[in-house]
Amino acid sequence: MTHHELLDVTALLEEATRDEEALATACRSVRHHTQADHAAILVAQGGDARLMASDGTPGDSLQAWRPLCHADAPEAVASTFGWHAVGKQALEAGGWLFVCARWPTRDAAQPRQALLPVFARLVASHVRPLPPAVVAAPGLQQTLVGDSTVMRDVRTQIALAARAPFPVLVRGESGCGKELAARAIHALGQRRHRRCAAINCAALPDELLESELFGHVRGAFTGAATDRAGLFDEADGGTLFLDEVGELGGRAQAKLLRVLQDGEVRRVGENQARRVDVRIIAATNVSLEEAVRRGTFRADLFYRLDVVRVRMPALRERREDIPMLARHFWQDCTARVGSRARLEGRVLEALMRYDWPGNVRQLQNTLAALAVRVAPRGRVRVDDLPPDVRRLETAMPYLVRTGLDAARREFEATFVRDALSRAGGRPSQAARDLGLTRQGLSKLVRRLGLDEETASTRLP
Image (cartoon, rainbow, N blue to C red; front, top):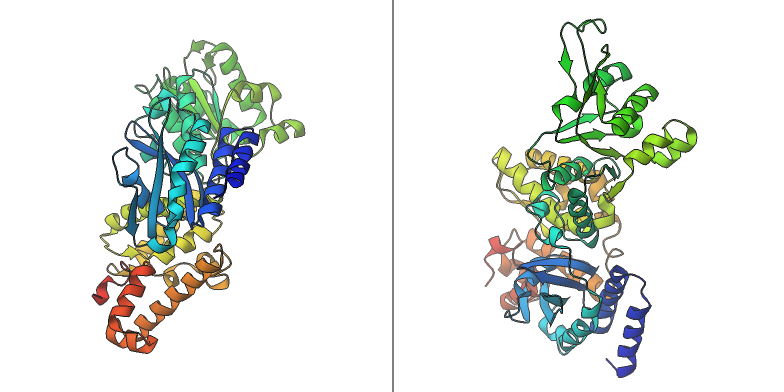
C-alpha cells in the first residue's frame, strides 16, 4: 500500500458524514487493499466483541475472529474457511478496535495482513463508545440475535427507548420481530416488574376490541354476563403492546386517544372513569403517515404514538446474521424433535442468498419443517431445502461470489464433493478419480475448508 493510497483512504474516511458510513468505507478499503475474501471491524468493550461493519462473504469468519479480539490474543489463526488475521488499536474511550480480514490460505495473506494494524490506527478515531445502557443491557443479544451493523443499531435504539418514559412506535415488515423488540423494551425499562399485556388490533372487530382494551360492565351488550377488566387495567403500572395498531377502527382510535391524553379509562357501559398508568408500545407494518393522508388513521393519535421510533430491519437487510439465526433456530428445533442432524455449510450459504419475504418468522418455520422432514442423523444438504429457497443455489452458483478466486474455489469444492460422493466416501478412490494422491486430496480438502463436511471419510 503506497503513501498516496493511504492518503486516499484517509480522505474517504474524512468525507463520510456519519461514523457508520466511515466504518463501511474502511471495510471496503481493507478488503480492496489486502485482497481479502472478507473484512470487518469489531470493537471489544467489557469483554464483548461487537461487529461494527463488514464487507464480503462472511462464512464462519466471526467465530474465528472473536477469540483473536483480545488485547493479549494472537494476531492470526487458521480455520476451515481460511486464514484469519486482525490488527488492533486501543481506543481513547476504553476498549480495543480490531480490523479483521480473511484469506483462503496463509500464503495469500502474506504480506498483506501487515496492513491491518495500519488500518486499525486509521479507523480508531471514527469509533464512538456505545452508551452505558447498551453495554449493560442484559440478555439483549440473546433475545435479538445478530451481529450485523443494523442489529447493533436496533439494540442501541431499544436500550435507549427502554430508559425513556414515552410511547414507542415499532415499525417493520411482518415477521421481523416487532413483538420481540417491544418485550425487550419492557424488560429493560423501569416497568419490567409489572405486566406487559399485548393485543393484535387486526384480530378483533371494533366492539370486541374495545371490550378487550377498556373492559365492560355487566349488561353493557349481549353476552356481557359479568363485569370484566380490560387490558389497560391489567397493565396498570406496566406496558401495553398494541400490535398492528394501524388496523384500529375510528371509534377505538378515539377512545385510545382519550386514554393517552387524560390517563383515564372508561369501561364499555360505564359512566365512571378510572385512572391508569400504562406505557404504550405500538407496532405497525404499514405506513401510518399514508394512513393519515388517506383519512383512515387519526393524525392526533399518530403524533401521540410516534414519539420514540424503533425500526426492525427486514431479514434481507442483514443477510450476514442468517447463519447465526439459522444455527440458533436449528439447535432449538432439533432439540425439540430429538434430532442430531447437522446443517452443511452450503445450506447456510443458500439460506443467505434467499430474500425471505416472511423474514425471521419464515426462516424459523422453514427450519422447523426441515428438522421434522430430514433424517435425525447425518448432514442436511442443499437438496433438502424447499425448492424456492434452494433455487438460487442451482441457478447462480458463482455470480453471488465476489471475484475470480472465489468462483474458482467454489468450483473446486463442488468438484471434490462430487468425487467423494461418487466414491461412496472412499478417499483413495476419490483421489484416483481426481488424479491426485491420497495425501494431495487431504491437503486440497483442508485448503477448501471441507474438513468438517468430509470428517466421516477419515482423511489423513
